[in-house]
Image (cartoon, rainbow, N blue to C red; front, side, top):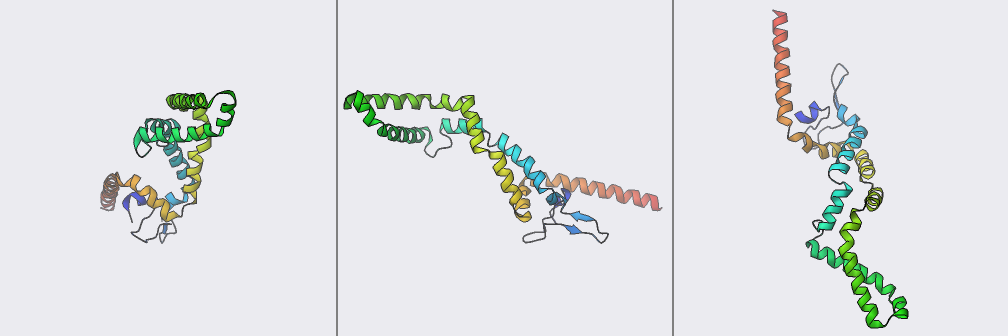
Amino acid sequence: PCPAAAAAGGARGGRGGQVDGSVARSGWVVQGVFLRRQAEVAAVYSRLVAREVLGTERLVKALVSGESVQGGPERLESILRAHLIKAFDVSKALALLGFGFGEASWLRTEVVASLIELFPKLLSEPQVVAYIDGAVNAEVTLRGRLTALPPAEFEALLHPVFKEDEWKLVAVGGALGAAVGLLQAYLIN
């Protein structure tokens, strides 16, 4: 079994190995306790990821800077412009009623340019951030998906979290085992 997962109460058992727990002859569950707490771990993990990785402010910043759009800020501006112009084409008939065609076209160009310029400020408004937060609801979505994962997939997803400190778990387990062994040797003699 994977020492990190075993120390945390899970069992890896290699590819295709047992993940849902091992029972010792005494009847005690030696491995698999971690996976019994899948719903609790999923809740904590999804809260952490939703706040630290997928936080609305971080997503908005990435969107506004163009980091999240293939092609960068220029591509984002192009996408915004295309959608805004499309929206104004619907209202073009209304604009033509009050303005001439040239004036309506100029007005559309000015409004689109202004909205593109205001876009970063609009997305940073607390009401907009709250709306996006509620609409995306990353924590609830992630928690539901993690809770629904089969144990093997759940453990495989979280194993990299333990992997970095796996050697520490092995070292602590070895030290504790050596200490208990020395204590036993001392008590027996």
